[in-house]
Amino acid sequence: MNTTETSKWISDPTHSELLFKIKHLMITNVKGEFQKFNVSIESKGNDFSDAKVSAVIDTDSIFTNNTDRDAHLRSADFFDAEKYPKITFNSTELNKLDDDNYQLKGILDLHGIEKELILDVEFGGFAKDPYGNHKAGFSVSGKLNRKDWGLNWNAALEAGGVMVSDEVRINAEIQFVQES
View 1 (cartoon, rainbow, N blue to C red):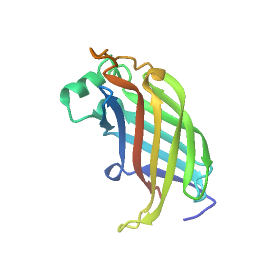
View 2 (cartoon, one colour; view 1 turned 90 degrees about the vertical axis):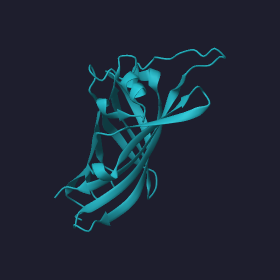
View 3 (cartoon, rainbow, N blue to C red; view 1 turned 120 degrees about the horizontal axis):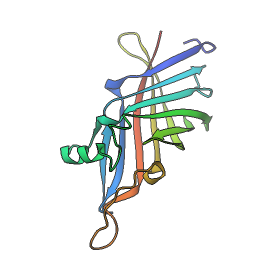
View 4 (tube, rainbow, N blue to C red; view 1 turned 180 degrees about the vertical axis):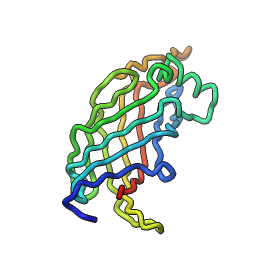
């Protein structure tokens, strides 16, 4: 791989996942995922220290393994997928912490609200697949307060507390393929 030319990397949807967890009834975590998303990286060099990262997520692709819950999450109570069909993220800064770890800052546009989101990124390495494609892998984690993006729906519980927490944890495993 040339280390001075700008290279573009595109997420490989068959080897990538975008998951989230949120506390339900304040006693357990429930997970969900977005099944349709694209992430791209433009970078010079192999250490990604100057990388520009962008992501587009299809809001309607939310999946929690429960049809009724998925419909509720797509409704105006939560993501309002009809009005806001896409969630986007565009990096503003990528800080290399050591050989394998980065801090990624960017603007998350969710539910019509743009706010900064900070994510931890771990570089998994490079590999060449059996077809000659250059691949790079990353693990991404972070958390956000859903109310910061206008996702305010909740229900009070009879015994106290609320049905779903404000904090949402994000975890992604993304494998990229270098464009030729």
